[in-house]
Length: 280
Image (cartoon, rainbow, N blue to C red; front, side, top):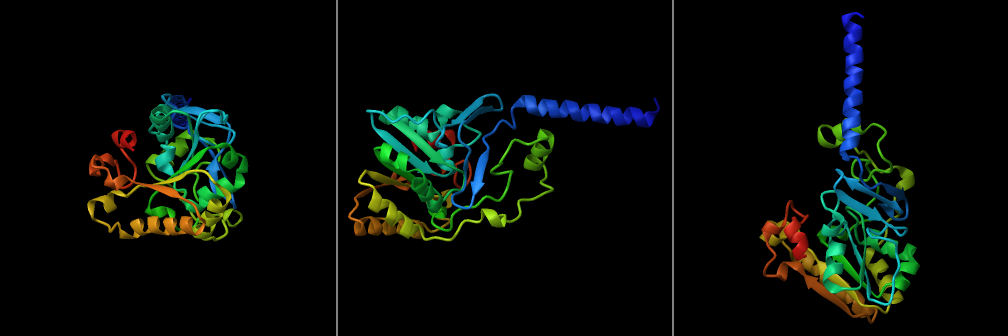
């Protein structure tokens, strides 16, 4: 065998070994999503795994980050949000917001979330799952200032993969080294029709007679004064006015008002550290 052939087969062997190593590491054992033009995207139902073979995760038949949806005689709380509620790959299941909250308040907490979801995505979920709305006893929305625009749409398999990668090595390279494909624009058939979150929130209030809490979660820049928090705080007033017009009483929790909450609770501009997650 000449040198060129040896190098060729040697290169193939290295790629096969690298691919097997990446797969064995569990780095591509992550949740996958479904995408459509109603809700944008949502964790696919009935899946589970273990990212890096240690960070366990699961989604039930209702796409909640929990075990089978089985509301009972104890209080059932629907916890609604974006990546703050989702927690994501860096966290084990018991470290995420839903399980932590359940351990503190008793009853059952059912987290429904997806990274970068906004109010319209969340309210669409509630509209699409009337059984969930009927079966839970209370609702807790975790919201930040980026949640009050258009519904988030599917754009990229690096942030919201629709299936496990065929070649894990290529996916990891794109994710962590250089993305030679790029996210691009949302495909036309996945574009979500424009709507007003205020109208949809009023519709939700009109349909429920159960307790609703809004946790107003600030960006780090809003907490430190690098960005004015006034616009975000005004959203609470808008929500209150919508609730009043519907004859609905809502509760607010302002995270920034907690004396123990500070800039050290963030690992970036928005996501909490593990200590921040525990405090939240």
